[in-house]
Image 1 (cartoon, rainbow, N blue to C red):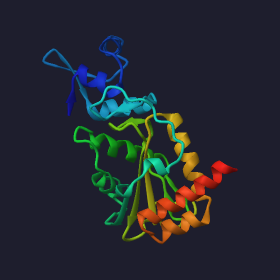
Image 2 (cartoon, one colour):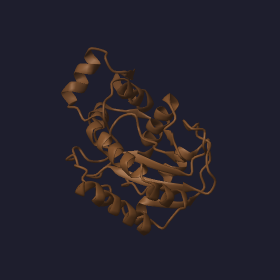
Image 3 (cartoon, rainbow, N blue to C red):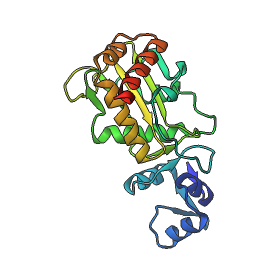
Length: 223
């Protein structure tokens, strides 16, 4: 898919002037088509990854970064996907297709970025848990990071660090690196608790999982 300079400005959240400067200095991949500058979407994504640039896949120009106090405020019943038909060779596309993004969100880019991250190293962290996430921050049209829990019908062999099959995938999409680190810190604390791991492995109802999360986080906040 060919993009124009306006598309690039929106995708990379930089001004038209900055795009023109990148073109002039030949610091960004582009082609000339009938004397018109065009960009290949996949090449631009790889270029952005190489420069650790955040990517805007939404129709919004700017979003205020959301400060994470607790994970419970980020989740509702729609954040949990049960009995998912996921396969080891297509689970990323299958997960992304189940998320209710805004209609102008480019899910193809999300899939590309998730696959790019997995190609570096598996995000299966052990104990049956995988935390797939893009290599760079993404704006997906919401003022909060996205967390979605997926429970596949059959556990997946995703080359986990402990060799165990994955029974729960927690898909994470953050707006900034700082937000992503905060998200990982909150999840790591929850996953350190046996009650939370039990809830995921045994596929408790979403309201039960949320209640357990809230109780664990309340204990942490009091300490």
